[in-house]
Amino acid sequence: VHINFINVSGKDLSGVKVNETIIGTILKDGETGYITFKRFRIDTSFPDANFIATVDGSEIGCTSQFYDCGTEKEDLAGGKYDIYVRIVPGNGTQYIHLRFN
Image (tube, rainbow, N blue to C red; front, side, top):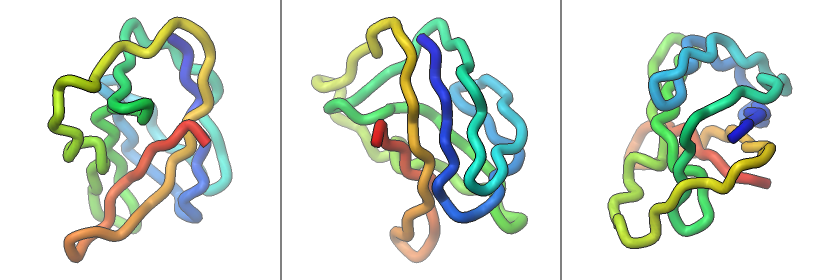
Protein backbone atom coordinates (compact mmCIF):
# COMPACT_ATOMS: atom_id res chain seq x y z
CA VAL A 1 0.00 0.00 0.00
CA HIS A 2 1.43 3.37 -1.04
CA ILE A 3 0.17 6.49 0.73
CA ASN A 4 0.79 10.15 -0.14
CA PHE A 5 -0.13 12.45 2.76
CA ILE A 6 -1.24 15.90 1.61
CA ASN A 7 -1.15 18.63 4.25
CA VAL A 8 -4.20 20.87 3.89
CA SER A 9 -4.19 21.87 7.58
CA GLY A 10 -2.82 25.36 7.01
CA LYS A 11 0.08 24.58 9.37
CA ASP A 12 3.51 22.97 9.18
CA LEU A 13 3.46 19.51 10.76
CA SER A 14 6.68 18.32 12.37
CA GLY A 15 7.66 15.10 14.11
CA VAL A 16 5.08 13.23 12.07
CA LYS A 17 4.78 9.54 12.83
CA VAL A 18 2.23 7.23 11.23
CA ASN A 19 1.74 3.72 12.60
CA GLU A 20 5.31 3.67 13.97
CA THR A 21 6.74 4.92 10.64
CA ILE A 22 8.68 8.15 11.10
CA ILE A 23 7.72 10.64 8.39
CA GLY A 24 9.34 13.84 9.70
CA THR A 25 8.00 17.20 8.55
CA ILE A 26 5.15 17.88 6.15
CA LEU A 27 5.15 21.56 5.27
CA LYS A 28 1.96 23.60 4.97
CA ASP A 29 0.38 22.78 1.57
CA GLY A 30 3.07 20.10 1.08
CA GLU A 31 2.92 16.38 0.61
CA THR A 32 5.07 13.39 1.43
CA GLY A 33 5.19 11.57 -1.86
CA TYR A 34 4.16 7.92 -1.79
CA ILE A 35 5.30 6.03 1.29
CA THR A 36 5.04 2.25 1.38
CA PHE A 37 3.22 0.58 4.25
CA LYS A 38 3.01 -3.20 4.59
CA ARG A 39 -0.45 -2.74 6.08
CA PHE A 40 -2.79 0.24 6.32
CA ARG A 41 -6.19 0.01 7.98
CA ILE A 42 -9.51 1.69 7.26
CA ASP A 43 -12.66 1.94 9.36
CA THR A 44 -15.97 2.54 7.57
CA SER A 45 -13.97 3.72 4.52
CA PHE A 46 -11.94 6.28 6.52
CA PRO A 47 -8.17 6.07 7.08
CA ASP A 48 -7.52 4.40 10.45
CA ALA A 49 -3.95 5.31 11.38
CA ASN A 50 -2.09 6.31 14.50
CA PHE A 51 -1.01 9.70 13.10
CA ILE A 52 0.87 11.97 15.52
CA ALA A 53 2.33 15.40 14.71
CA THR A 54 3.67 18.47 16.45
CA VAL A 55 1.83 21.68 15.56
CA ASP A 56 2.83 25.05 16.98
CA GLY A 57 4.98 23.29 19.59
CA SER A 58 2.28 20.89 20.82
CA GLU A 59 1.93 17.21 19.96
CA ILE A 60 -1.54 16.30 18.72
CA GLY A 61 -3.12 12.96 17.97
CA CYS A 62 -5.59 11.80 15.38
CA THR A 63 -9.37 11.49 15.40
CA SER A 64 -8.92 7.83 14.44
CA GLN A 65 -8.18 7.11 18.12
CA PHE A 66 -11.95 7.32 18.56
CA TYR A 67 -12.67 4.65 15.92
CA ASP A 68 -13.37 1.92 18.43
CA CYS A 69 -15.91 -0.22 16.61
CA GLY A 70 -13.99 -3.26 15.38
CA THR A 71 -16.63 -4.62 13.01
CA GLU A 72 -15.97 -2.07 10.25
CA LYS A 73 -12.16 -2.22 10.30
CA GLU A 74 -10.32 -3.78 7.39
CA ASP A 75 -7.04 -3.63 5.51
CA LEU A 76 -6.79 -1.14 2.67
CA ALA A 77 -6.40 -2.92 -0.67
CA GLY A 78 -3.02 -2.62 -2.39
CA GLY A 79 -2.53 0.45 -4.57
CA LYS A 80 -1.74 4.16 -4.36
CA TYR A 81 -3.83 6.51 -2.25
CA ASP A 82 -3.83 10.22 -1.41
CA ILE A 83 -4.81 11.06 2.16
CA TYR A 84 -5.61 14.66 3.09
CA VAL A 85 -4.43 15.81 6.52
CA ARG A 86 -6.56 18.41 8.29
CA ILE A 87 -6.70 19.82 11.81
CA VAL A 88 -10.09 19.88 13.52
CA PRO A 89 -11.19 21.14 16.95
CA GLY A 90 -12.74 18.84 19.52
CA ASN A 91 -13.10 18.51 23.28
CA GLY A 92 -11.24 21.79 23.86
CA THR A 93 -8.20 20.68 21.86
CA GLN A 94 -7.13 19.93 18.27
CA TYR A 95 -6.85 16.66 16.38
CA ILE A 96 -5.40 15.51 13.09
CA HIS A 97 -8.22 14.37 10.81
CA LEU A 98 -7.47 12.09 7.84
CA ARG A 99 -9.65 11.70 4.74
CA PHE A 100 -9.23 10.28 1.27
CA ASN A 101 -10.61 13.54 -0.21
